[in-house]
Image (cartoon, rainbow, N blue to C red; front, side, top):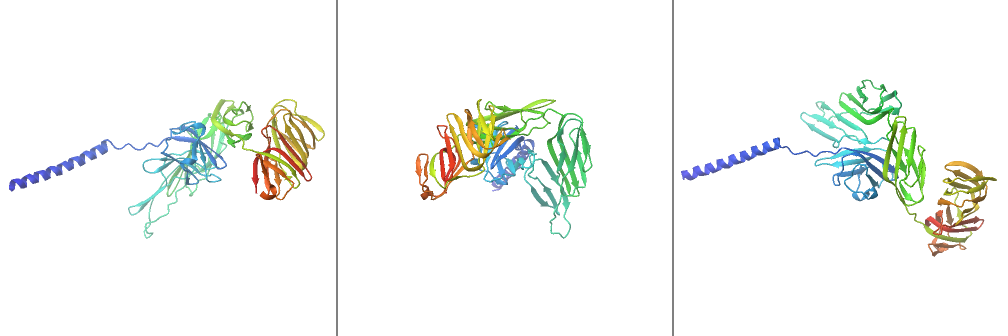
Length: 513
């Protein structure tokens, strides 16, 4: 029995020693070979908003992976089926690629890109419509913890487009039940001007909240200041990152704006276009967003046309995807920005219309006829004077009186536009006003209009066919025919006088009310 007891004791001791050895080994492995933390990717982007569509251009940094990347608009998560790549690209999202987000909000405001690490989502990028978008220093969402006797620690990450860090500690007063409202400052500032020739004098203005009592500025060129609203001169060409650190009794906050100041240097080309997609012909307003004070611009719209204007308007006549480039230049040199498949033009969806004999039908005011002159010989007689068009002219004709008039477009171009009180714009500039008595423009393209016809219910004399099907207006109610355009044979005819409305062509909008 004694031998058996001694044997059992030895076995128990061996088991205890084994557990201790394994525990020590685990501790050693943990400290010698700690788990590799999730590396937060570096990332920067450009953002554009067009209605309820948001475009995000990967402008530099690491690729972002599917499943590790999420999007929020106005603090709402965006489902995966609302996120698509342009021109057939796919994950991973790499530099030069553009993502399109269809937002359920009519006015996308706050846009955020999040990296889904193993613990807490990290905000990589944040932008509001009225603030420049720059990458955020990766930081987890705001947290508040209470420990000890007690001490409050607050880390605040505002969803704005700049680096912000706040740290503070405060002892809770006795009798407050362990709660205290810390009010650390939140750094913010503006600069004016942000670009120009050297020497460039910039006035910086503190806009921080939380009543700061101390300021420290770093102007990015080695210069610093500790006053609230300093003035600093940049004497060497370059792009400078500016930071402001503010403090009060509760803690400090720092805001850093990367590349905020461009002093007498090579420009950095950038631009936006609105809208970026639609049916042909599509008119796009391009806006120069270049930094570095460019003095000249060279646009390539991707369809064989270009411009040297700063903010041009261009019309795309044919369906397709178009890459756009801008070269911005100043006395220091030039820089080019290319956006692949930036503009998407689709086939227009139209309805073939045949309308005649309407006595009560009428034409809504404030519409216009628009087209591009594509060859020589185009003339119009307006206000008793003949005007000659040049090839490439964008023409818009606005009739002031639509109670009577006639339009005829056929194989010979525009042969009739008879209205009174017509305002004629050429390339966006008002050229003439008066009665149009004659017109002959044999070569045109991109013809469309904003004219809208209304056929009231009960107009029993009306003969109306839509895509070859007869429509009985007394039975179906009021009919609205909008966006008049030529039909498949490139013909369009409109005739309007008292108790007589006739139209043959097509329409972008056809509704029965």
